[in-house]
Image 1 (tube, rainbow, N blue to C red):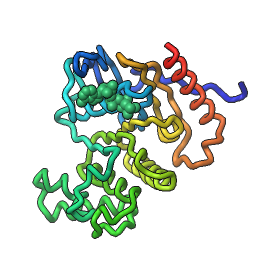
Image 2: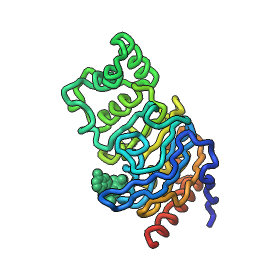
Image 3: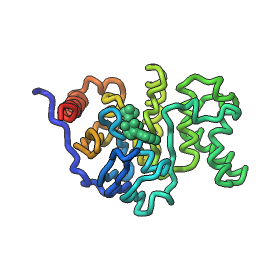
Image 4: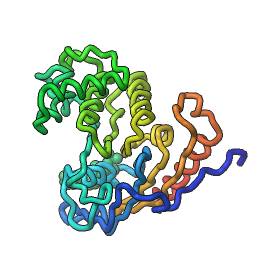
Length: 264
Ligand SMILES: Nc1ncnc2c1ncn2[C@@H]1O[C@H](COP(=O)(O)OP(=O)(O)OP(=O)(O)O)[C@@H](O)[C@H]1O
């Protein structure tokens, strides 16, 4: 082995901003989570990776309040998760954006729902667009845009609500490779600019490592954290890191754990 060993984050070693304790969740009597614990530090980009059907989406859906859980607790910033401002980006942008609205109206929507005065809505969205140097023509309807542009609109909509945590469920899986690279880079730029606590579910290990400060590796059901791996290569990360020994070692280590878990 010439590649250096990846760093391993101790579970709970970082001060937790998101604190999941004793989470239970079953579907039709089949447990997915039983007494599940997880800590996520403020300002980190965490990716969740694990076997098919282990409950990755279920986990972020519970943490963001989209679906209920049977027992346990989720705290965000020391408060019950229900009082936290959450941004959520779905895998399927087509189903999550409103096709009858222009892109800009989609982005403003969370502010409108919250009753933010119109003038402030406009100012906040303008500031958001300027901050991320968005050059899309947002007067178009979203169905007139490419998949990558639509997913970017979905990310901007999530950011418009000024979230404390941004959750993303496989946000690139409905995009082709070129669009994946485009949206991934924009997402990284957002993270660099805001330092927003970000939790992304991925079924692609390369993507999971590329974006992450922490990679949470989940087991088969009932699901637990097998290991949390730290990946601390400086940002912005570009395609060159794919050949970097630290990247290769971290990915290799994660794959080893994943394979061992599949054999269990
Ligand atoms: N609403 C539901 N009703 C019944 N079973 C469900 C429901 N939602 C999820 N499940 C089951 O719970 C398990 C976890 O699902 P989940 O989608 O969270 O897994 P995942 O790890 O994100 O999967 P994948 O890698 O396939 O996207 C799966 O076996 C799934 O079939």
